[in-house]
Length: 122
Image 1 (tube, rainbow, N blue to C red):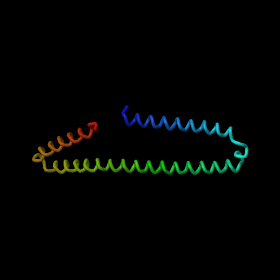
Image 2 (tube, rainbow, N blue to C red):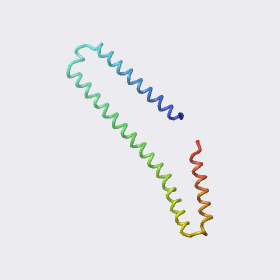
Image 3 (cartoon, rainbow, N blue to C red):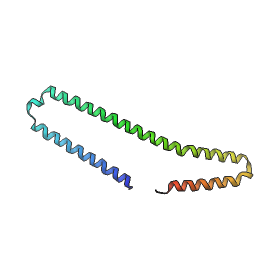
Image 4 (tube, one colour):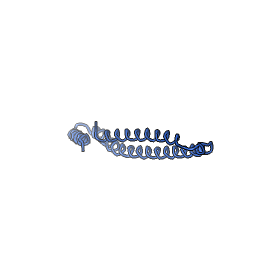
C-alpha cells in the first residue's frame, strides 16, 4: 500500500468512527431531553436544520469533486497534447521515407527515455 492510500484509509476510518460516536451521542442526549423539547415543532425545526446541513454538505462535496475532475483533466491534457504531437511528428517523418529513419529512431529513443522518467517515483 502506498503512503497516500494508507493516509486516506485512516482518514475514512476516522470519519466513520466519528459518525458512529455522534450517532450514539444523539441517542444518549435524546433520552435526557425534557418532553417540551420533543414536541412536533421542535422536531420539525431540527429536521429542517439537518436538511439544510445535508444540502450544504452535498453542495460542498460536489464542488470538491468538480475541482478534482478539473485538475485531473488539466493534467491529462498536459500529457496527451505532447503525445499527440509526437505521433503526428512521427507520421510526418515517415512520409519522408528512409532518409528520416534515423530521426524517427532518435525520436523513439527520446520518448522511451521521457516515459521512463515519468514512471520513476519522486
